[in-house]
Image 1 (tube, rainbow, N blue to C red):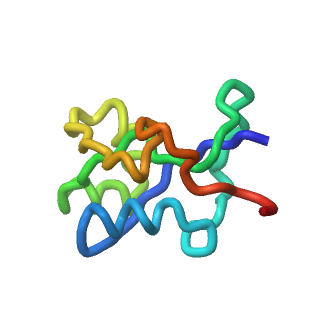
Image 2 (cartoon, rainbow, N blue to C red):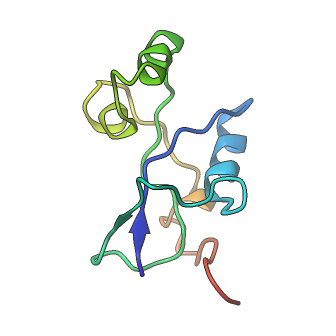
Length: 98
């Protein structure tokens, strides 16, 4: 079943954050995961932003949600390297049984 989730990943750099986001062991599906009947495919990163520390404090306090930060907070989206998105034409990282 296709699922999407907005997650917050802390990492030393963007590439490591992308790797962690795609790691189902490190970032298991949480309670905020949503069924998406329109996009059945392997795990990819669709959008990412760098969250400044003052905003991160607000997020921890429950002022903002990850969805708000991704789409409504005015943070510039980061370019997703092809190996972590579906733009490369590669199959990406599979979920489920191999």
